[in-house]
Image (cartoon, rainbow, N blue to C red):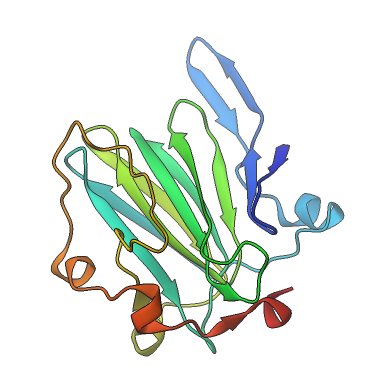
Length: 189
């Protein structure tokens, strides 16, 4: 497993090794014992899988508030997407900063998003599948969203060439300033 740190503390790119031949490949996308040995000790309890049919589909920025906050391990099963994480830990040296990376079925990269981050993505191809693990169960009363185009965060979604498609929930999402954050740097580190 190749592990890359990012400019945002706790946010890590994991790229599993692939063993391939003419038939395709095999890859171990998560092994709790091996990850614990290198200091990543997470207990995933739920897997989610979503399909977006058209390029330019934006989902997010989403997170769950305590007491059901979630770490997430995100990967792309088919197609390609630009995956985005935003540090919303008040008091963090990187508060309101974002990081984006392309996840694709071809590159096999995964983004490990810790508690205290909002998460979103935009699809880059047709029929893009995103698969992600969570450390807590979905809790509708803790579900939160931040506007994908919050000017204080200023994410470059890199979709000027295509129309953005959003859900009604995401179109109505408040800015981070309007919503506030339930996370602090001290509590999350």
